[in-house]
Amino acid sequence: MRRDDICLYLSPGDRAELQSLALNRNTARKLVWRAEIVLSTADGHGTFEIMRRAQTLKPTVWRWQERYLDEGVAGLKRDKTRPSRVPPLPREVRLKVIAKTVQEAPPNASHWSRSLMAEAVGISPSSVGRIWAEAGLKPHLTKSFKVSNDPAFEEKVTDIVGLYLDPPERAVVLCMDEKSQIQALDRTQPGLPLKKGRAATMTHDYKRHGTTTVARQSG
Image (cartoon, rainbow, N blue to C red; front, top):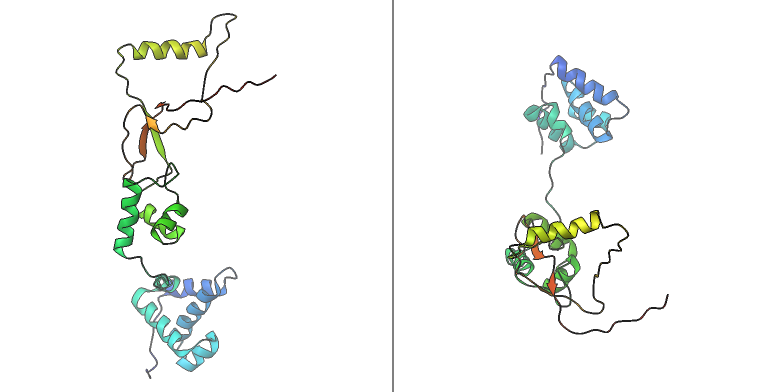
């Protein structure tokens, strides 16, 4: 492959910017020799002399000469986007991950994790993460809600919250929380499934199934 040396004219502004890049000790090395290639070309040096000065090969000199002619100084600062070495996943696999995420629950777990989905579908956890990010899915997030049909719901909430915030004088307020050894999976009201841009929803309260024993603790 042969090509005649080209003539290149630099505007005063471009020349000043390229000289500044070439002389600045903080400029990346690859940008320095790109600037030197263009400056040497504008000064009338031939291809072999430019190769010697920039310590690079002929195709590289030609590439950055053409890049400057096409895009100016801005083109020298931009690296060419290279295709990813990782082959894209088939569309069927992506759709399968999305469908399982929004329509199915994993065995023995409350929600899908990247590792669980990767094992179920046969891809890497990082691929699962990319699919979820592109689809706007966040299976690890849930939002709680409660819609009560009790006509006195507001008054009851006010009374209970007021009891915590302003208890009667010399009163002891006790709260019973989780029952031990009972897993609550059924909520009192149906929630909405996970979808793009929205987390799955469930009520903050649930139905208890099963029995348990009260363990006695000594003080």
